[in-house]
Amino acid sequence: MSGTLEGKVALVTGAAGSIGAASARALAAEGARLVLSDRDEPGLARLAAELGPERAAQAVAEASDSAAVAGVVALARERFGGLDAAFVNAGIFGAAAPIADYPEAVFREVLAVNVLGPFLALKHVLPAIADGGSVIVNSSVVGLRVPEGGISAYATSKHAVVGLMRTAAREVAARGVRVNTIHPGPVDNDFQHAIEMTATGAPREQAAALFEQNIPLARHATPEEIAAAVVFLAGGASRFITGAAIPIDGGMSI
Image 1 (tube, one colour):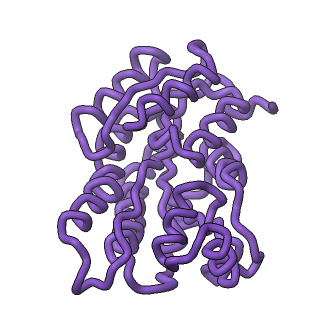
Image 2: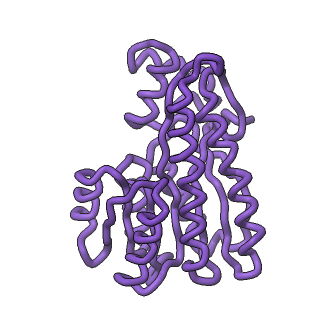
Image 3: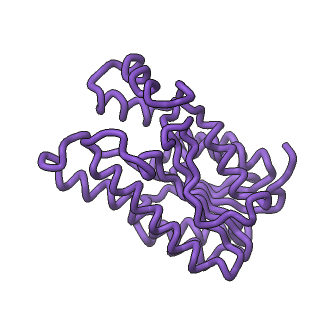
């Protein structure tokens, strides 16, 4: 621990997932106090207990529920006196189907979580975040390039948050607040492996190997590697980076 975030308060949404949890641990290791949110109540409770009540507060919240998101931001103020950084990470995949066959209800759900969710997070976080703060929105390599068809909802949502991020970055730059997106490639976690099996119809290990053929570095990322980028963007070392779409994808977007 180097304490680069000592005295800072960070919000992590989607905190119960592997990237969210790894990021929360990494932010805490740098001294940040945390407000954690997710709709997975048991997973959220386990992470909060691991980090301890002095370090972390938790709130079960649905990303697409404006009142719930506002409540999470209010919790940051009540427990820790404010907010200095936010990692907007909650997201879902949806289905794998051609556009002509894609279920409309699933498309709406994906956009509600993956686009409306980040919009609501920014809507409530930006007025509350301290000047000089940082917001990181988790997109995907699919937000930079679409490697295959059949993922219209997911691809649309991950491209959409780039426009949202850049608009927000313009709006709050005068306060020194930075807004960026990260674009992970395949990560070694259950979420990604489920996507791969759905996309390929192959068993987990075979599906992972097929995906790795499209990664120049020929492997999946670890959640901790994504978390390292979150910590960098949350801290002062990145204070001149805003409006950027940052790939963490092993070269897939080359």
